[in-house]
Length: 81
Image (cartoon, rainbow, N blue to C red):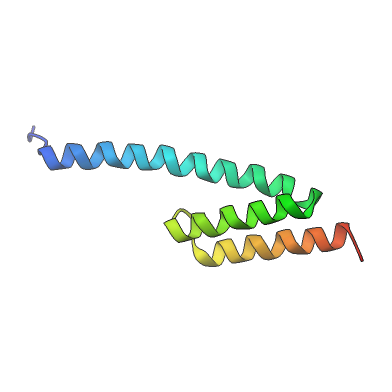
């Protein structure tokens, strides 16, 4: 069996850390999305979190735009003015 290189092992450790962090961010996005239709403040918080996640590359920018659009539409439908 071939010996693992030092850099390969480090890369593996970094991948694990990133995966755990990204998963927690995605979970937080889902939580914020559920709270968003309640009021405008939670909608703005969810939009900011989506933008941050897209900027960091956790989700694709088009996915963030699509989710923001759907959240805004949901708020508009629930509270007509």
